[in-house]
Image (cartoon, rainbow over all chains, first blue to last red; front, side, top):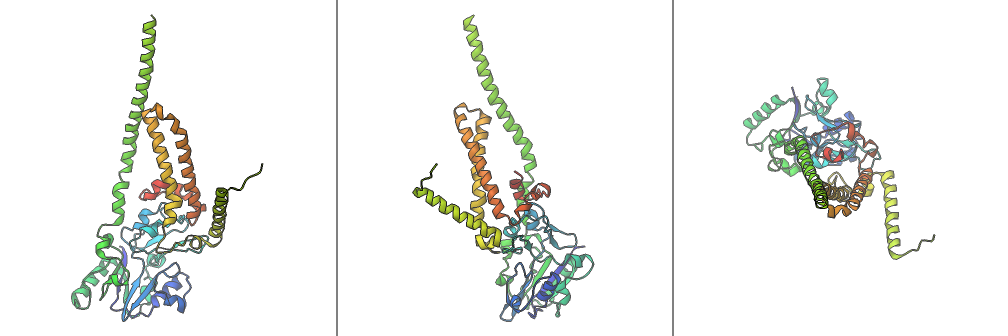
Length: 256
Length: 127
């Protein structure tokens, strides 16, 4: 069964303990100046954004069919069956295609490093595999970030929307976006105000399906075009051969 | 032999010196310092020029050569050699560009063993 995270921004108090727990879990530096940064980066996998009295978390959405995994020429990203989208640093060649492809601009790069890695939230895959919660969900004092089975969390999010329709924007962000993700966001204001792309822009079709339509046909194209072009080559050269032979025949014929 | 410093030679020398300095910075302080790329712009003019321009050049060259051979066009035989040379230089430019562009160019051979046929770039890189 696939795991997921449900972030309910109406419960969030902006304490940023998830940021700190994330930094500890991933051996990243964390201090007041890092806490003040309101963007995720190569040294900050999740960020709590503050707009007045509203809060919003940014983190990897862990798409069901992730664009980063689809575009990577060496397959350094993959979606695990438990839910997290993980990264294999050994395979990575540093081409940054994942960063260009991600609809949520999640992967970040170590621009100043001589051996740069792509960094992002990996949904604590070791903890999840061991049956534990992610570090951010475990530490959250109000339950704003909740870890659980994907199906259960969808049901719970729908219940919350039904019980308090006046509080929420009537949408579970991540349920259908780019074919569904493993992170769901409930909010009292539009998540777009915090830099998330609009649902309309994301669509409900997983991004890899667009390129897949083309890429899947390449194996058919190779034999067909080899045959067609090979045929053209044969005909055009045969024609030249025949022309030479005919000219010779004519010469011999007239000499006789 | 004495090399005369003409105007254009000086210009090219200046460009080469800038290139050497950029290479030095690239391999001493990383991609960010030399390319001005950020997490918001992971690809930019940098990719458009250093990589794709070489590929385009090569593709054009190989297409011409392919057409000449396939259709056996005698009158165009003379363009085959310069076209192949240009195409080869194009790919060379691309590969040299990759050594700068890839964050971990020493792993470029991963392309050959960790293939991901779903990637559009896979078809590019495997050539």
